[in-house]
Length: 183
Image 1 (cartoon, rainbow, N blue to C red):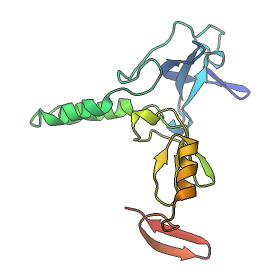
Image 2 (cartoon, rainbow, N blue to C red):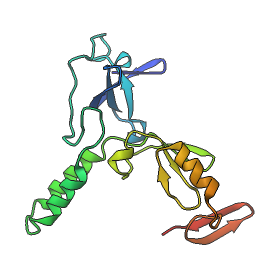
Image 3 (cartoon, rainbow, N blue to C red):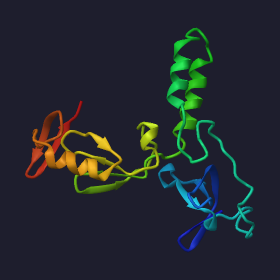
């Protein structure tokens, strides 16, 4: 179980990683809850055996072979290319690729994004490169360019001289509210 607020909730450990201090951190899925609630938790919030107080140390397990020790994905893009390059007539290819996709997307890789002045918690896995996995992303609200470095994002916003709307076509407007179709 995992302590969340005042209560302990039944949860499954999907992955582990080590923090800089050498302490383990666990990515958990709360039983019978939406995946958007999955999160990284520290060892002090985890108990094994339904809350009987047993330590989680030594109980680590890793379900995704593409996770490295620090919890970031490693090499799954190359695996996709390898699978798609051969075996087109293999009837189990689709099933294998679907299982691989399921394992890769099981763990939310981007905790938050900031678009303009709005900071948003990410709910699910996002298909961004491994270099930005585990980091907050900053997106330009006009170009949709992204970076994990707040200084780079601020410099881009300061120097951007293009149109002050998202790329695409405006399809609806009501007062200050506009809806854009983005390619």
